[in-house]
Length: 300
Image 1 (cartoon, helix red, strand yellow):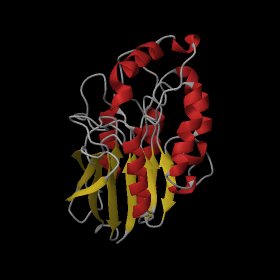
Image 2: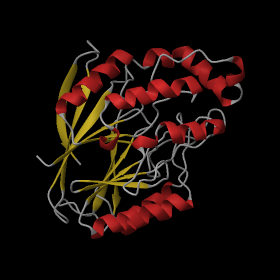
Image 3: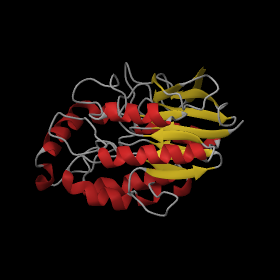
C-alpha cells in the first residue's frame, strides 16, 4: 500500500442554528426555505457520523474535504463546522477547500478565511490563500477555492485568473519535484461537470492548465453523486496513460431514495511516470444508515 488518501465532501452539518431575522436577508432567505422544505431531512447526521467513524478506522495518511460543511454561512454555523473538521484528524492531516455554501454570502468571507485557516495553510505557512500546496510524503496536495457568493438559485463557482496562474505554477513545481499531484476543488472542474448555473464558470481555463502541466488526480464534490471524467494531458504521470482522472464523490451525509452517503479511499503508489491509483467507495447502508459497507473497488 502506498499513500492512503480519503476524500469526502458536502457534509452540510446540521441541525441549522436558528437564524436571527436580520441574518435572513437576500440569498439566505431562499436557502433557509429550502432547508426547511426538506434539505434538513436529506442530510442525515447519523449517517455522517458513521462515515467519519469508518474513515478514521481506515487510518488514511491524509483527508481531503472539498467543501460545503456549512449551509447558509450563518455566524453560528462556523464553530460546529470547525469542530466537525477536527474529528477528521489533525489540521496538518486534513485539507479543506471551500464550497458555495461555505461562501454563501459576501459578508461571511472574513469568518470563512479565519475559521478554516488551520486546514488551508500551505507549506509556506500562509493560510487561506488559494491555491495552496501541501507536500505529504510523495504526494503534492493542491487546494483551490471555487466557492464565491452568488445570486439566489445560482450555485456556480469560479477560481479567477490569479488562482489559474497559481495552479499552473504549483503543478509544474510539484512535477519537477517528482511528486504525485492531487488537485482538490469543490465544483466539478470540467465543462460537462454540472448543469447551467451550478458548474465552474472558468472550467475551460482549468482544463487548459491541467492539459498543459498535467496532474495525477483531481477531486471534487458539489453534485452529491459519484462520477469519473478525464482531462487529456501529455504530462499526466500515471502508468495508465495521458488522461487525468477527475473524480466526484457523493455527499458525506445525504441519504434518500437516490442518495447514499459515502466517501472515497484512494491508494496512490508508484513513481513519476508510473503512478498507480486505485479507489474504493465506502458508503452508508440505506437499510441501516449507521452501518458502513465496502463497495466494489474501481480504478481511476
